[in-house]
Amino acid sequence: MSLYAGFDLGGTHLKYGLINEKGEVVFNDKSTTPPSMDDLIPLLRKTWETLKRRERERIAAAGFGFPGIFSLEEQKIFQSPNYPEIDNIDLIPALSRFVKVPFWVDNDANMATFGEFKRGAGQGVQSMVLLTLGTGIGSGIILEGKLWHGKCGFAGELGHVIVNPNGERCKCGSQGCLETESSAPKIVKNYKSLTKTKEDITAEDVYHRAKKGDQAARDAFAQAGFYLGIGLASTINFLNPEKILLGGAVTAAGDFLLSPALEEARRRSYKASFACCIIEKAALGNKAGFIGAASWAKEQMKK
Ligand SMILES: [Zn+2]
Image 1 (cartoon, rainbow, N blue to C red):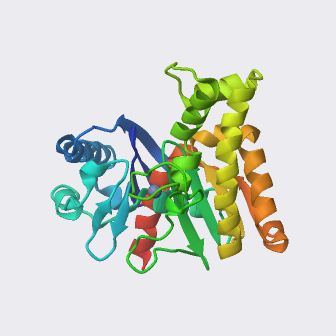
Image 2 (cartoon, rainbow, N blue to C red):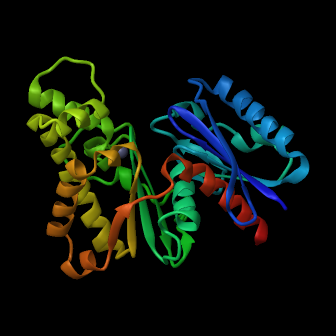
Image 3 (spheres, protein in one colour):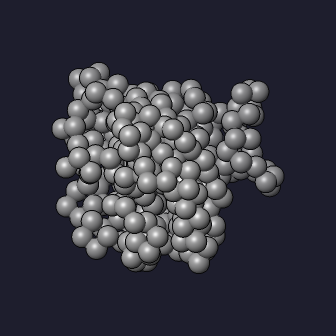
């Protein structure tokens, strides 16, 4: 039985693994993401060779999810706000030197969306949006049962839709993007500005304080949730999707973030459209990206 390899490059980890013909994960692991491009290709090569050694000739194809907007025409990442090292790098020739089976490269959030659609909480739907909330905000769209790339491959960047015109400057060049208003760093920033603390804390610390009853911590999540709700309302009114899945580490904050987000989404969207959209947590956690990339490769091979 053939196997399909999937790779998902994130800001902190390279997640990778193998799925079988049924789409089941048969192996997965992760490595720390190197800070420079000089080390990234050698790491991908080492990882690929490890998988090949494990499974010999059984790997039929591979998929790679990279952060940033990926041009379908030029097969390059044009702009990666959180990993600028890979901007305009000739990924395909670099990978071709050692990957000797058919492979596909795509945006990481698109691959995670495809993973949830094929193997996670989006199975069986015809339309859905996945939002992954972490250090950044990634998203992807399934329409009419297919991954929606847009004309050049850049669709699904809900993280860079404006939810607050006077908000924070974003690495994408804009201002007040969903990513700058509702991601983990903004939750920390909200908390620091509410409490005037100079402590070195993470969004997870803010969450633990919220759980203990710290009102400023709860407000920090509520502020982020408010803008997330605006983003959700726009998505609901614009696409009328069957499902919106929320994934990423920040969703672990649960109701501290999601209650204000859903309240705002309900308030700002068409009642009927909100009512027919299921908003729920994604199912595959941080495995969605590599499962999606492997599933994408598997699907392309069948075409
Ligand atoms: Zn942006």
